[in-house]
Image 1 (cartoon, one colour):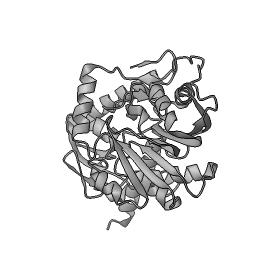
Image 2 (tube, one colour; image 1 turned 30 degrees about the vertical axis):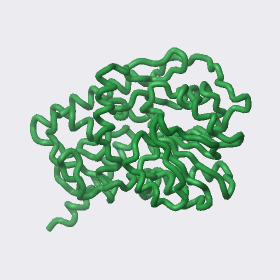
Image 3 (cartoon, one colour; image 1 turned 60 degrees about the vertical axis):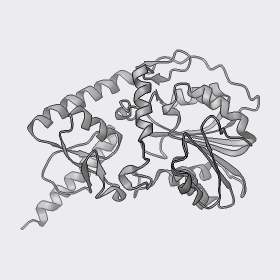
Image 4 (cartoon, helix red, strand yellow; image 1 turned 90 degrees about the vertical axis):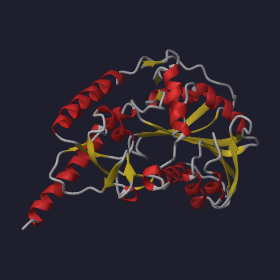
Length: 336
């Protein structure tokens, strides 16, 4: 990994092997496979709810959108964001882009859905009042260039909504196989401004371990030459934390198969580190309970009597550890 000299963005090396692996991943990818296509819940500050619901609510809290308009969701998947957006803005026209049409029938069942643009032969056309990119930029080798290319689709007062993982706050996002760009607040702002956006909101409290940016098109409609930032100081400590966690997991897996919290990116990384020595995955998201992940059954949080490995950022890890400890204590009190 290294950081870009012009924007400070941390990136994984785009090797031929990395590109080949991405093609393999996307050829068999099924969004939210663990919950049967239902968008995963995010937690923190209350009960879990779909990420898209929080994003649309957050957008509405800082910007008063008109009753009618059109939204283009870039990388729309099976329509989680568009579905949530329709619930709050039922008179808007919904459009999406994807690299194939595997979810088109699901998208067409969303009220207000108009069109799916697919691939380079069917690029988006027209102009939109909102363009959203939820977990898109981390997959792109040249995110500023990609953003700049989208601006021609934005109406003069259009809003741009961007959501990416916060790589500074969450070390476990760094090994994700198809992520090449790893953002912190500073690099996300710099990339957006370099593309020609005027940042209005940049926050990290809407969705845990993620960054939310809301912007408008710069009136001059020209990319800004931002002053090159220094290399980020968080990268080395985060990589050291990953290496330490991997060593711990490897040691514990020698004794018995692991019980791992989570059924997503961090859990998949640990599964690979210990070469499949995992017996159970635990998850807070009830939509995933009973499903399968990497050939193992996903269970809810429960009294197990076993140590649970939690491959998440420190703050979240502490919250989950307290919750699991309370379950163990309650189990002992209730036992005969």
